[in-house]
Every structure is written in C-alpha cells, then in structure tokens.
Length: 119
Image (tube, rainbow, N blue to C red):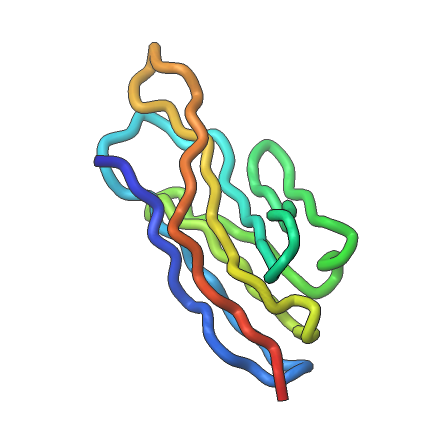
C-alpha cells in the first residue's frame, strides 16, 4: 500500500528552525512532484512549496523555507527557518505518483504533522 509519512514537527520558539521530512513508501513507478501544504486552525489548507520540474514557494514563506528532495529515498524535506507564530499549522505532504508506467498520476497525502511556533 502506497503511503506518505511525515515527521519532524514540534514546538519551536519564534525565530527558530524545524526540518520536516516526508517519505513515500510502497509500490510505485515514479514520483512526478512532491510538495507541502499547511492548514492553520479555522483556515483552509494552503499551498506552501513544490518540488517538481521546478521549485516554487508561496510568498509567505519565500526566503525562509527551503524544499528539497532525495529521489533515491523517495523523500521530500522542508527546512523552515526564521519561524513565525503565523507559521503554526498542521503541515501536509503531497505527492503526484504513478503506480505503473501506464497508470495515471494520482495525488497522495500524508497524515500531517503539527508545527507550533510559540514562546
């Protein structure tokens, strides 16, 4: 069974750093893109960053967050620096994966990891 598993969330003070990881496991042919979204309490889920043919960031995190991938490990990372209280949210990993060469691209989601920025 294909799944995405996130790790690395936690509590950090404003100005601090955290690194999130997300590993895709199971039977798959290829991963076309991986990215991160977040959802704060009472708000809709929002896009944070994507690593595919290019790397893109939401304006709110540009210059502070860095997305990277280790294709050999089917893993995507999100290095978050200079964290602010408004970065507090559940962070979700997302990946577009082909299960076989002739399969369509399907979007998969992780279970989410909590990031809390507070003094």
